[in-house]
Image 1: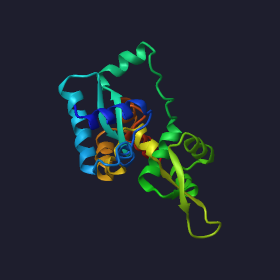
Image 2 (image 1 turned 180 degrees about the vertical axis):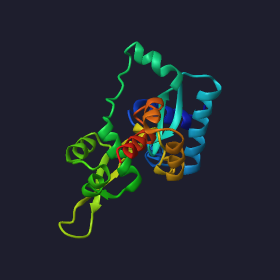
Image 3 (image 1 turned 90 degrees about the horizontal axis):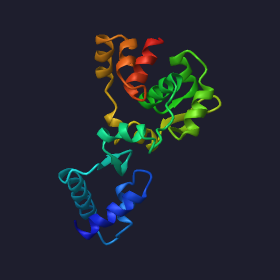
Length: 201
């Protein structure tokens, strides 16, 4: 591996979060964006070709070295890594609404869900999955919410464009009932959240 690829590997290994390309450039200011990108591809290929138990992936707006999916279950079973706390159905439903309709205010989320979501939004905000992104026009100028980079990381997305499109969700929900979708898909997925939300009317 090139010295630059080794430097990036050391930095990514030390980081507990995805590191944006712009931050990686700070490691070697003399390297061009193209050189950083080439070194990242070299590192990714190194892990893939040599059959390592970890991989370099682009996630949540940055780059991160993670355990390969096929080894995750064994590691968790041996209690060598802790799984993040799962989100409740109510939190997932609210999060899905925010993800697809952002920026969106609390009253709009409550109108869609039909229940008070104040405590749910507070919990999602405390967990860093949503943040205040502005204020709406009108009486009281209510807060508007949007998702964060941690949301992308949590769901394994590089950017919001990777969320399933509305027409794809419509087809999925027509084919199977919400109960079946919720049973087959892990609950920590936007699709399952949207399915559950639709099921509640």
